[in-house]
Image (cartoon, rainbow over all chains, first blue to last red; front, top):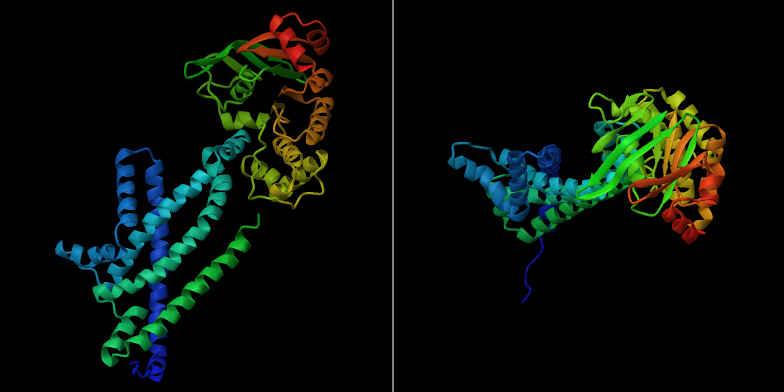
Amino acid sequence: MFSYTFHWNQALKALPQMLDGALITLQVALLSMVIGLALALALTACRLSGNRVLGGIATTWIEIARNTPALFQIYMAHFGLGNFGIHLSPYTALLVGIAFNNAGYLAENFRGALKAIPDTQTRAGRSLGMTPVQAFRYIVLPQMLRVAFLPATNQMVWAILMTSLGVTVGMNSDLAGVTQELNARSFRTFEFFALAAVIYYVIAKAVTLAARVLASRLFRY
Amino acid sequence: MIEIQNVRKSFGSLEVLKGIDLTVEKGEVVTVIGGSGSGKSTLLTCINGLEPIDAGRIMVDGTEVHAKTTDLNKLRRKVGIVFQQWNAFPHLTVLENIMLAPRKVLGLSKEKAEEIAVKQLTHVGLGEKLSVYPTRMSGGQQQRMAIARALAMSPEYMLFDEVTSALDPQLVGEVLDTLRMLASEGMTMICVTHEMKFAREVSDRVAFFHKGVMAEIAPPEALFGTPKDPELQKFLAATH
């Protein structure tokens, strides 16, 4: 029957090592969000530019990012590009893969947010003598950010969880990588992964809570 | 002075303005009445260049609105417009709503812009609402705020596009009172309205639009008392 003996001590002893890994996880996720946000803005601008080539590139990117497995996107960044002689380290490949994925989702998020702000807001700004850029900057953009903010924090949580896919390209310094190595040495799979799961959970929850607090400060209306 | 000369405007195959001529002198209050689809709202959005025109021309103090060389952003500081939907900026407080354009468009200091905003808001009876967000106010209050927002740019002309049409009946009065006050202060105004009693009271002249044509224009006593155009007679019979 059930004859497994838990060895939690072994896992807890490795906690400092795992927390170091968690920091790397957070670092990759944060960087991928920063890069993803910048790329998403660029993709949104391409889509709105009216240029067919730029619009086509942006749409293709967004379609691939949103409709193929994140695992494949990371694999492609490491092994796929490797075939063409572009060799990215596991860390960089993971970062590139997740940033690619983030950019696609965030661009779609921005588009929805832009649609949510009625044209009459721009018109009201223009009728006060504002230039199109001023109307966008002071009237549309701040309202867009509010609409886009919470979905963007969901993407941040998703990015944190996606970093665990790094183990498939040889990433061994993040939380999943560290956990996998500890597991390989001890075969205490349940204990190590359960502890890692708790750490992921705490990070994800903390990010969500922090975002809520920030949102209530930023968006008072 | 606003001079509208033989202005034509179509949306697709539908011609909404069929050669409008109208001159509004400084200090004059002209109201425009007529059924929906008569082109009266379109005319207002053409006057401050929000809509292009197909033929004719509109001059504001000698500047041709639709000339390529005209700086529309500059022109719009002179010609304020308030719409049926007041379009409050929801992310800004009432005070910030008013301060935004004076600061960014006129380049005024924060202090100066605030001074103007407080003055205009007090003027329209919203002096107590400075730090409130517009969505917490009634439609009538938001519409008065929109009027204050336009006035804060110190326009020389004001265009009002059915500013009471989207309001609950009990809120119409407060907005009309604000317009009456502006008229009595000598503001040059063109008001598109469905409020006949208001039109009769404040106007120097009333224009009746029908199917893209200005069918009749006269001082209110004459237009309402002895209407000549048969369509106007029908319109007045239906609205009284």
